[in-house]
Each structure stands twice: as C-alpha cells, then as structure tokens.
Amino acid sequence: MINKSNPFRHLAVAVFACLMAASCSDVTDDGTALPDGKYPMTFTASVDGLSVPNPASRATTDADGKTSWTVDDPVAISMDGGANHKVYKISDAGTGAMVADGEANTLYWQRSNETKTLAAWYPVSCTIGNGGGSEVSITDQRSGFGTLENILHAPAQDYTYSNGGSVAFTFRHALAKVKVALKKGDGIEESDLSNATVTFTGYTAGSLGYDGMTGSEGSNGEITPKTETSSGGAVTYTALVIPQQMQGKKFIKVTITMNGVERDYYYTPAGSTDANLEGGKQYNYTITVKKTGLQVESVTASWNDNAADGDATKATFRIHLAAFSEPANTSNYTVTDADGSPLTASDGVYTTSSSAINISLSADDGYTLKKFLTKITAGICKQKVAYTADTRTYTYTFYDIHSDLWLDNIQAEARAVNTSPASPNVGDYYYADGTWSNTYSSDTSNPCIGIVFKVGAGAGDNVGNYNFFFMDNTIHGYVVALQDALSTAGNWGTRKIETPIANVDNASVTTYTGYSDTKTIISTYSGGSTWNDYQAFKAVVDYRSSVPAPGTSSDWYLPSLAQLGDVYNALSTIGVPLGIADAAFQTENDSRYWTSSEQTNYGYDAWYIKMNNGTKESYAKDGTNYSRACYARAILTF
Image (cartoon, rainbow, N blue to C red; front, top):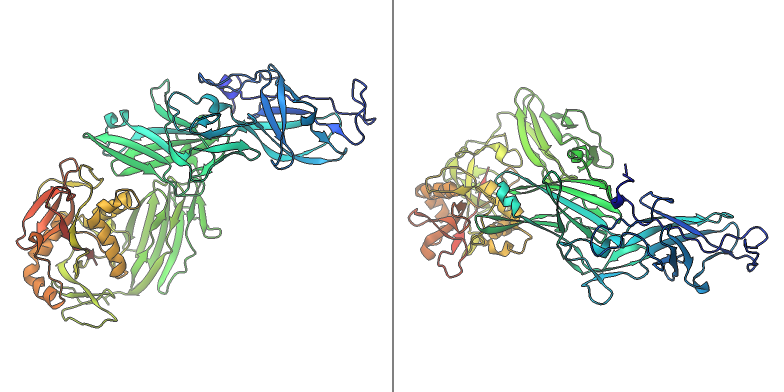
C-alpha cells in the first residue's frame, strides 16, 4: 500500500487545463466559436496512483532535484506515435495545471466519438550521457539521484473523447530503481562486508520520448550507486537505471577485500524475469556473499515500497524441464515440491513457490538404474542426490532455489541386477564406451582413452559428490588420460587471487577433491576476463571436447594433490600399459604436472608433482618471472 503521507511517495501530480471542452454548439464558455469539428483537449495527470487534490510534488529528496513543479515547466504530449509532440507548460505550480505553449501547440479532438493514442513525458528534452551539454549523467550516483528522479513518463494508451471530460494521464518514473542489500555467507566475515563495494552494469546513455527512457545500444558501463544506511544499521546500495533486460549479462558486481586481496563476484541473471527492468518499478536484491560465490534473492515492488524480509521466499519459480518418458523396467517418475506434493508441467515448465523440488525415478524389482542424469544449465540453487535401497528409488533434490531453473533433459536406463562387468584392476585399459579390459585394443571405433590407476572410492569421495549416478550407484575407480590436456607447460591460474576452492596446507592431504575443484574453477572463472590465466583448467575443458568421456563417468577433470599422487604411486603398475598406449608422462621441465589443489597462502601458489620422482611442491600459479609452469593430465571417475 502506498503511504500517501510520505513526501517521497508523491511524484508529479500535474493537472493540465488549456481551453474548456466545447459544448454541442461548438462554443466555449467565454462565447468564442471554435472551428467546425475541432474540440480542444484538456488533461489531468496523476503519478503512481496519486491524483488531485494531492500536492504536485515530485518527491525528489536530493540536493539537485526539484521537490515540486514550477511555473513554465515544459511537458511533451504526442498523439502520432512520437513522430511529433506538442509542448504544454505548467501554469499553476500548486495544482499542476498547464496550458499549451502557444496556439501551435494546442491539441484537438477532430470529432465527438474519436479515440486517440496519447503519451506524455517530462522534461520535453532529456538525454542521459556523460553529463556534457544538456545531458544528465547516470554513472555516479554516490551523492544522490538529482534530476534523474524527475524524469517522468505516461505510457501510450487509447483515450476516447468525452464531452466536457479530460484525458487522465498516469505518469510514472521513466527509470527503474535497483536496491541491493548484502548479507554475510559462508567463508565471509562481517569485516569483509563493511568494506565491500557494489556497482551495477547497464546502459549509460539514453533518451526520453514517446516510449519512455530507452537506452543506447553499445553504451553499457558501470554505475556507482548511492550507499544508504537504514535506522537499523543495514546498508543498501541504490541506483536509478535505464530500463533494460539484463538476462545473461553481468548485472551486479560485489567487490570484497579478503586478506588484502580484492575479489570480484558477479550476479548474472539467468531467468527472463530475474532482472527485466521496467520504468517506475523497484527491484530489491538481497545478496548473500559466500566465498564460493553469490546467492541472490529478488523481489519486485512499486517505486517507493520496501519489500519486507522474507518476501523473496514467497516468489514463484519456473522450472524448465522437458517431458520425460519412463524407460523400460522403471516406474514412479515424479516431480514434487519440498513438501512432497506433486507438480504438473505446462509446456515443459513446472511452476512452484516452494524452495525445493524433487525428481524421482524407481527401478523395478531385479533392476538398477544404469544412469539417471539431469543437471542445471542455468539458475541459482543447490543440488543433492539420494538413493533409497528398499524401493530402488533415485532422487534428485534441487533446493535453496532463488531463481527460475533450466534443467537438462533427464536420461535414464535400467539394467538387470548382477550383470555388472568384472571388477576393474589397476592397469586395466579404459575404453570410450565405458568398459575396461586387461588387454589393449587399437580399434578406432571404440578407442582406449585411459588407464585405471585406482580401484574403489578414494578418501572423502562418494557418488553424491558428482552430478549423476554411475552404472550401479558405485564408484568403481579412477582413470588417467592417455594424453596431456596441457602439453605445453603453462599457468595454473591468477597469482594473488585466492579461489573459492578449499585450500590444501600440506603435502600429506589425502582427500579426493579434483572433480569439485575443477567444477568450481570453471563455474567461477570461465567466461570472465581472467579465464585465459587458468590454463590448466581451460585445457581440461578443451580436452573434454577432443576426447569425450563415457556417459557413465564423471567427465575429465584436473586431479587433486592426493589423486595425482596416487597416479604416481601406481606408475609401477600402470607404466607398462601407458607405454603400450604411447601415453607416458613428459620428462622435460622436471616432469612437473599441476594438481587442482591450491596452497594455503592467500592465493599465491598451487601444488604440482614431479612425475619423474613423486616430489610434491607448491609454487606461483602463473609463470610471470617464475619458472614453475607445469603440464596438466586429466583424470575421470567411473
């Protein structure tokens, strides 16, 4: 509900009155005859639902803005789609009454039953740019919004002549308001947030007219918001921006300084409704900053209303998931909300206000799922998987949903129990179709792509750490690739930047974290300006395309310190099959190979292993003025 006693909620209330409408005899009140068939238009206006006799305040509170209309303020009105406009001027600052700026600017009805499409805007001429000449700058709003808050627009709509009646315009702000509040998440201290900076990206140039304020393509740049502190001490960052669709674009940047090193986090809206900014609306974002990234909740409100805490949990989310048919020997495919209530799709979209959804499929008696795969391609949530043995049910749960979600098509296949291939052995050849053998085959239709270097799950590893189930919900082992992903020694990543992955403080750590490390680095830095610095990880991404992994495996990733250490430990067994497959490790450059593990020293170093003697060392992540560039060899889990 709009609080009408708050001056910030009272925007321009303009009452436009030129000549009184003609009567049936085409004579005005003062007895002056009008041309046959012409009736002068009269106007009234309200903003954000307020109308006369409310004051004509624009509710601008900053030093550079006006708080009310002044005589001779010009307003543009167009009834030809914006090709031309007429200028009216305020004649009474108290009521907002206006008169045409001369006879040439008077608008007329042409006939008594006529309908016209009209739009209006204030000021008549307004251009956003770098602030030169008559332009208004939008890029630095730290000291306030100034005249940006005075830009108003009455959207085009049809009005029909009414004898003695007036055209009632409803104005709104031509810009959109964006507010951001930061919260502390995992791995972040309150002191980190106290020195945070927030900037927005969007159009920095545009012009006002018939369609409101429209941005100039190619003018995207950074906008520095105003920092405001509420009575409760919470800090928010607010800016007025040109209306635009920010889906798929880096919209909000949060910069945190940790241990003397700046780290940039970006919010890139995934859904079409996440940041489709419209004039006259306010977009409230509550951003929880975690060491691993941003968690964003959003609420859209009217220009002056503040969304209450918890409103974001009431949002409705759209889950995009193509139709799925249960394969043979499976049953009970269901999609449910957090409470277990079934959801039904419309055109492949499930709609829910729940904070979680579950996708389940059961294998029939005597069968198990060979694979049950879906993954997030866009959207913000967490994900976990579970297996219920007595009903042979596999369940994905997508929880902490904070945006619309796009999920890959589900893939599933059931097979009879006890038809697993023979258990693998260290040194077995691993083939493109996901099978293994102790004999080498040069068959190009099903080529050998790696060598098994460990059997069974490694320390701290389990099926739930991956995005899908393996052949029978079991980790059989690990495979080292036959070729280097990075065959010319290169960088691990950007020095002095501590990444979101868990740090490794000594060479004796045994946990198998390569898959999650690689996934985190790719999701954090790929597509960013520093992605080319992460040569080892980028090479793994490229290797996935050149040597596809089987669907029953994890896909290729950079091994952790413990995993590459186990590759070295197994060389006495796997050395011969590596040689037969022409896949020996390089001996140049001290045979150094990168691991996915980062050292605990504020982002300076990462771990590598000398594959000629097993030495584990850490050094600078990039090779600038250093001589620790390394090769990279990928592994996979099956």
